[in-house]
Amino acid sequence: MLQRLPFQVEVIQIDNGAEFQSAFQWHVLDKGIAHTYIKPRTPRLNGKTERSHRIGAEEFYRLLDGVVIDDAEVFNDKLRECSKAPGSCTVPYAR
Image 1: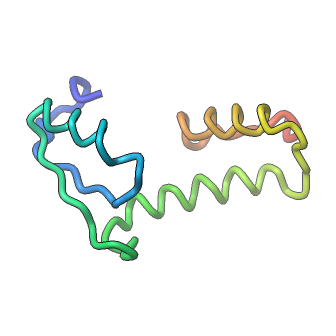
Image 2 (image 1 turned 90 degrees about the vertical axis):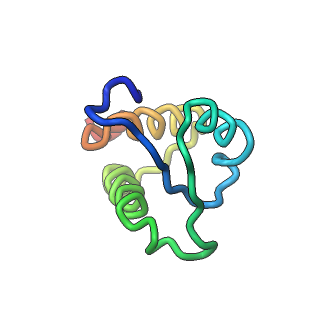
């Protein structure tokens, strides 16, 4: 992904989530990218990311609108698909 950007990434601002610990930390350091953590319990400091997550979740659940997916694997597959391509979120029941 870094090769696709028209600029060099110098710093990444991240929250304190477990997904950004250890392996991620070492990966960005290997790439020469500094990273800073936002203060705990202050999502407003990472507002654009938090808004993106909220919009994606709202879109996903709006498409479900009362439909119950009883197959966790189908649900997780659709959630991953939705996360990869924002704006293209569809579930089998919405087609």
